[in-house]
Image 1: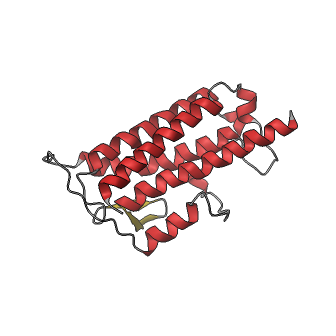
Image 2: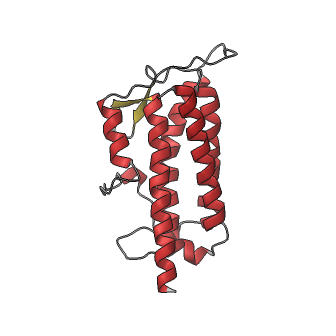
Length: 190
């Protein structure tokens, strides 16, 4: 897997996520965005807010790396991507196809749906996904194997930049699929 092809693929996947958000949730009324299939399960709004909380943290750290770039080259250098054991484990744990349910750490657990403003949550989601897509354009000038990003677990556990980008997009796809399941369940209760 090469860096430049991966960056293009991730940008395409982010664009697909944004299109899905608009198509599937853009016209839903607030009460449907807040609807929970069960008390211990998340609503569509909670899925999106969880992504906002988690991704804001990682995107801020990635943006710091991108902002610290000095002279910008005219052509980014491609490179084969490598994952270490931490990256492989994180990517496996959040892969949308894997059915392991992991509890969200407290700092990225969403508030109750009635405490959230749907328009604000969706606007922030769009903004963060657009920023992530734009950061991919600039980050191709960085070494995705050498540069590391601090994780939610602290400075002692870092992810390679390439793994961070791949994890963020996979995490978004995982919770988008969860939100789509909530919408499908909602139709059966209507």
